Length: 310
Image (tube, rainbow, N blue to C red):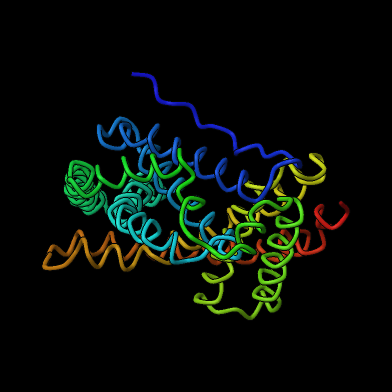
């Protein structure tokens, strides 16, 4: 079975209202969830889990981005349900990345081949269990109810059907361009402030910078068509480079916790020896990436914000 294609971000129009933009973003990204859930469920490709997880994040980010226009009381129940669905996709994705990238980074590079084989086998066993839990979640009445009702809520623009103050309803009819400029400006300011002292930042602070860059990235994807295409493409390219490096460092940072879970109750010295070598190797890679981060971050931080020119 051919995999669903990875779709491009939603394309908004400058003539759309805040209400119409929110509808388009939700529809586009929930359709992505529906496209990729069967791939994740059937374990056809690890991209399935990844794309469902990313689409859920985009949906939750959209709810946060439009919080100034749509009260939390309306969207919080959906946000919580999506958080619950993502709760199984996160650990499964961590194991997918660990096996396909973490273990592969040291395959055949040490004399600890027996430990390597044992750790891979153990990781795959945990991965099998994670996919089984994921399938149980997707088979549950709670998930099916969420998917059906959320789909219908988007179709009828349920957030617009409830009682709300007249000024809030009027605000939803205003231009999305002005709204986008405020959102992008705020998220850019927060990201720059968090990364202001990049060279002295702790691992926890770098993790927070990664989160802020991700928030900015999602907002940029949502609103990119509203501004100069060439300038937005250049801005996004610089942001993606920074985000990519931070993402690799985060994968390394979560590895000790993941290994702790895999090795709980396991006494095999060969397995522990290879796990220690893997942590050392990935930590070395992360340290090198951290040295490389300053250049792309400096370039990004000096990149002009396209939305300020409109």
